[in-house]
Length: 257
Ligand code: CAA
Image 1: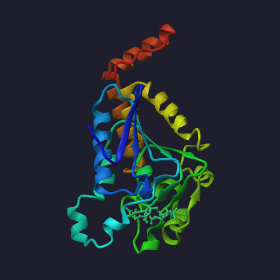
Image 2: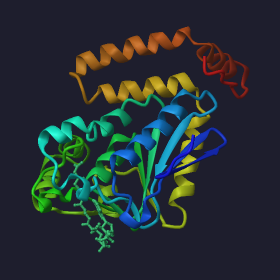
Image 3: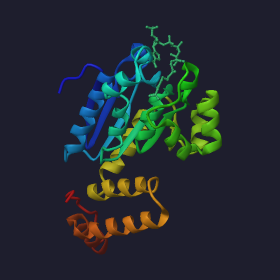
Image 4: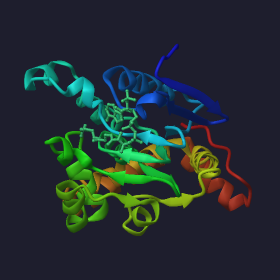
């Protein structure tokens, strides 16, 4: 695979995707998102990869959807471009995904980070949904995921009055998992990803599905769904191996089956 707007690397069982449009602060255009999804799909299908990290650079994770590209678009053009839908497709990747965020994480950039499963931030990260400043609202899940992540009151302030959050505020309000220095956030994200990638692979995928279900359904249906997924895992070799290893007081050897 050759890409023009992203870089990919493999670190043992972790697939790293770096957004690479630095001059435009990683503004997300259809080509960049298309390449990002192609790489994420390939890591998802690769048994040697257990977790994916998406990062930008130290100055910008991403400053949002590409405003210049959208400026003159009609609703029909937006629909036909299959552009904004690309954010939804990231949420369909089955393996765990961590966003490693530094600098600007705005608009569609914040929506991309929130479509991941966890966010690791550098202490320079700035989170915002500034679309009101260009006469629109978030269109790639921002109002929904932000309200679920930080609560209604703060989401309203961010979307209606362009309030940005510092990394520390984002941590305080549950938007991010951890904050590290700008020199170490990516290594820490890779370390977290390596930890996840070395867990039982099927259980990690199913655990992601079960937690995401919590945002889609009632408590009773979510618990019923979780119970079936829990029973399903008893069909895996990894469940037999994990429980046998516990009894034998040894480390399990996961097969991903
Ligand atoms: N789209 C297109 N280009 C962008 C961009 C974006 N979202 N954000 C930055 N750029 C470009 C700038 O136009 C500039 O390019 P030129 O050098 O060719 O002029 C380059 O990146 C550097 O940007 P600045 O000179 O503006 O850098 P700065 O440090 O002065 O400011 C910033 C940084 C505050 C992030 C500012 O660039 C900014 O406000 N960007 C737009 C943020 C925004 O409104 N995002 C929401 C987009 S809409 C959206 O995302 C909708 C959705 O829900 C899907």
